[in-house]
Image (cartoon, rainbow, N blue to C red; front, side, top):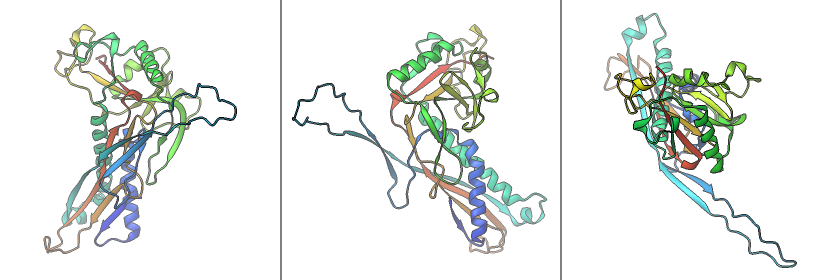
Length: 332
C-alpha cells in the first residue's frame, strides 16, 4: 500500500486516500502491466538492478562411463537503471471546501490519481518507443517512406522474428491495485498501440474482439482484441510521430497537417523484454493531504489545503531482441 504523509487526518483517512489514488491511477498505467517488476525497497539506494542469467550451451557431448563431465558455470547480465522522482500537488482554499457543493478533496485525489498513472505511462512509452528492433509496415525500409497501414503479413513477420530470438510469450501480467502481484493470462505476445489503430486492426479477417473471447477472465487493462498470438491493448499515451512518414494522400492515411502520414508505433513484447519499478506495493507512491484548517507559518489563517503525490520510478529495456516496434500509418 502507498505511504501517506499527513498533518491532521486520521490513519483511517490515510488508508482511504492511498487506495483511492491508486485505484484511479491503475487504468492509466497500461505499460506498467507487462514489464519485469522490481519494487524499490526503502534505504536501498536510488538505482535498481535487473539480472538475466544467460542461456547454457546445449550438452551434446556423450558422457563417458565413470568420468565426471566438466559442467557449466552460470553467467549473468546485470542492467542497472537509476530511478527518478516525480510528483505534483493541488491547492484548495477554505472558501472552495466550505461552499462548493461537490466533495472537492475527494475529486482532487481522483484527478491526482489519474495524473500519476498517466505520468508514469507517458514516461514508459518514451523509453520503449526508442527500442532498436523495428519493422516498417507494408515492406517499407524506413519511417519516412511508410505510407500505408500494417498488414497481416507484417504481424506474421513479427511473430516469426520474436520466436527466432526465443522470446517467450507472456502468461501473466502485473495486476493493478495496492499490492504487488501477478494474474494469469493465456500465453501470448502483447501489442500496445494507439486507439487510432482500431479500425485497421478490425478489418483483418482473423481479428477477435474481447467480446467474442471464449472466456472473459484473464484480460489485461485496455485490452481490445487479438490476432493470432498477439493480444492488442490500446494506450493513447503511445503517441504517433506527427508527419513523419510518406505522403498521406497516397493511401488516405491520417496526417497532422494533411501532408505526410503520421507514423504510429505498435509496441510488441515478449516476456521480460523490459523492466520497471512498479506503481504498486508498499513503497510505490506517497500521498500527501493537508486539509484546510491547519494553521502554519506560511498559512497563518488556515486558508489553504493541499493534496499531492510523489513516486520514484524507472523503466529500462532489458532485451531489445524480445520486443519489436512496428511503425505504421493509420487510415483516415
